[in-house]
Image (cartoon, rainbow, N blue to C red; front, side):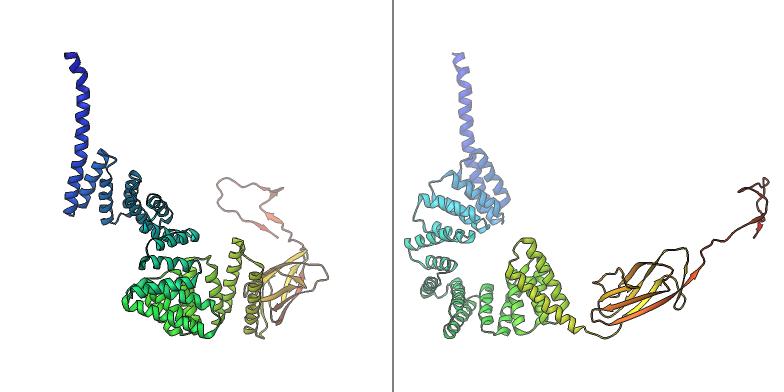
Length: 495
């Protein structure tokens, strides 16, 4: 009997412990719910975590903890918990859709699409999953997949939301007439649907690019402005509506209005690349080149390899008569295009043509007639005479040349000197053979406008024999002089 009890005791204890753990998991969850209701979120998180450790399959604990993470702005943790809830019960599409939305909000569109697929596998006509899948695929650039999902969502039920998503996807696939129909239907059903006004305005701008007739083109711009204005009546803080309307004004060459809209957009906090680029183009059209350059500077500072910004700033600097700055931008543009391997033959020809045109303008604008000013430092000379020893075979000639323009050449006795050709007022140096027939050093400088000057040094030869020294006192034996110890001075006499 005792033996039987001993065998049963571990089993009884195990069952009791398991029951205790299951009970404690539910207890932890209940405590977490009370703390969440009391807005004590950190303590609630701790209780939900205890519940999950005790019962790893407790889906409602993951869902509850995800809601708390959302309240605390911890989006990564929230998405992770919703994903775990979806994995634990793959037969419930609601969990998968919740996880998909969480990842979509975090800009993880690829992961969002995977959870949408999980939901659709269980519920093929789940409209929310289909719409979210269309948005996710649109963000990842999978347009065919986005189009199919949007079609299926609209087929399930035609609503303002499904028509809106369908219209946005059709815009991305360049089916602008269908997109126009879809978005008009949305606004017909709900005239307060602000995003549809902006989307419809973008469609009109796209149609503007397609149409060739001036009447049709003008009509699209008027519709675009009308849609954006209506959106701004609903939401005066809509940066999308301001940005879109500014583009329509820009096409109408109403640059003052375009600049006003996009500046308001920036004042409301939107300062991305597209906004600066667009405003720079408006200023360019308005003839305010320095303001345009200021915006282009922001783009280049943000990305020194932005080839579009470099090209734009080069054009603006040329218009603003900063021709040397334009040349520097074109040089940077060429280097970047070569480095990225995207330098096509047409681009190369276009940029080279711009560089030659601007360089010619710089050349003509800086033309002057002043002769260069030459200063000779070596060899040492007094007035125009340099004394040179008979014993040397070469003489170094150096100095500098001052001129308003770049120098074309510097020569000494016809031999080119070394100097920096791309610097103004350069220093020069050259070594000249000094035969007995050389009687002068002729330094000549010519600038790029063929202005010429010359300096001449006459050479006087000095003998090359060293002095002879003879020591008479104290007496020396060979090259050694013997001095008494303790002497602190010595008198030396000689000739």
